[in-house]
Length: 184
Image 1 (cartoon, rainbow, N blue to C red):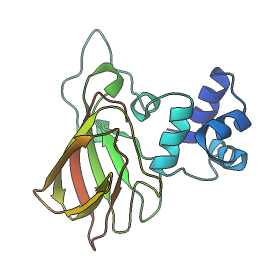
Image 2 (spheres, one colour; image 1 turned 180 degrees about the vertical axis):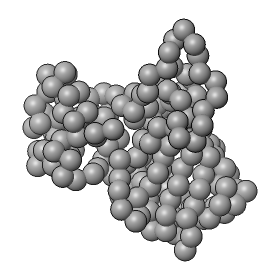
Image 3 (cartoon, helix red, strand yellow; image 1 turned 45 degrees about the vertical axis):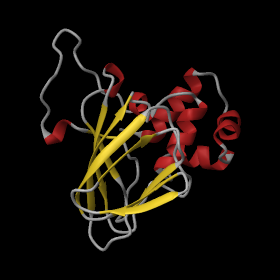
């Protein structure tokens, strides 16, 4: 997906200027311009702030079309939708199962290379989320609590609490998570 082109189209559809979107999202006008031109990739937290300003969830932004006459039940690994627009060696990958806008549950296959995180800003959104660490280690901050989890460990919390995910280990971390409702 062309992240910049999609943001530009949605912004124009909502009748917003770059300056208005920047002010609402707490970003600079220059940052919005660079993102729309695909000259920079927003962190997950920055993209969340941008979409909250529209308002739109990440699930809606990356929605894939499912044929309503033939509900899709099974998905191959290649059919998961990447919802993390980052690139580079420390880029987070969040692959979504199906079109979360047509379900009450959002399921993600998350990959965090060493030193990767969801961004310096803490995330917050409606709902609850939980997950299990499949491999590696992840530092999770929820409110004033910080914990490093390893394989087999899990988490479950109210997503309205400020939170952040960061790989502090030496190997890639993989998590399978769920969010309900799909507001991320």
